[in-house]
Length: 350
Image (cartoon, rainbow, N blue to C red; front, side, top):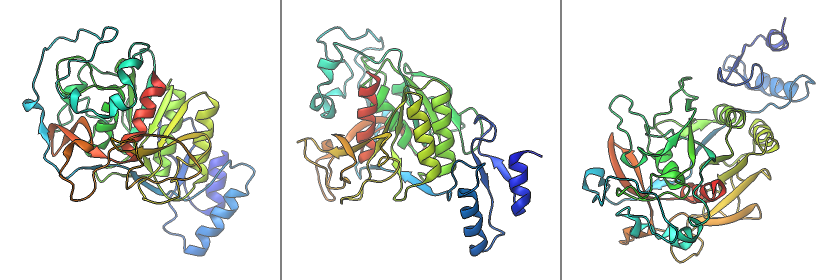
């Protein structure tokens, strides 16, 4: 009998792998609904003290750390096209993407100077999120400004299949900040536009997902060639299994970038607060801390995430990228530490 089977027999429960791509018996979960509260606590305590178990914790739920702004979407068909040919950036050249002038966030971090040095070629960034609209899935379209972006090894940890469609919109927006197709005469630009995105879906159409799936995605990214992981998600509670996964990826040389949280107070969320992760707070166009951003000792850096207070009429204060919403290919302004984190992940890719 295997170690896993023996543990299950001891407690009359069944441990199952979280995803087929995860190394056998590395990450397991168990349905404890038939156990009462006291039995659940005893099981968790015993597993934490069992020499055969590295870490055990509750399967917490984490959420996206960004939101759509209450302003109209811009249909992709209404985006002015300058040219359909991707000519590549020359030194000192600004991209010809027609909405680039609305990306105040790029000049704020010196992107045009950075592009003279690097474009992200050769780097792989895993976006652990709601998926990415780079492939058509039923009536969910492809995001038009990702058609020239490179993608590799997608996986959906919710449905356990090698796809990662986006039925929410958050993950596509985040991926666009990192590597939107750039200088293609359409839409907007991305920071590391020559990088490759590894889209890993762990969050549902409602923007939430479990620690088990997120941890499985971290292992998957680390074992499948990701140089950078972006997690624009989080929760208020530390989790032993999440921490173990972050430690594993960090020890393999992966740079982990995370949204600090949108609590509008001191106190950084998880996984951002772990020392293995780069915790990113958010600033607006003036470089000041955004009204919603979490802050605290764990913060490593601040990046543009938008600063659009309720009731504001200035739509330009959000972060503009291509995404999908209500099964349409659109360009939208979003804000949150979710939007700040991919700026840092993109720079890490450069």
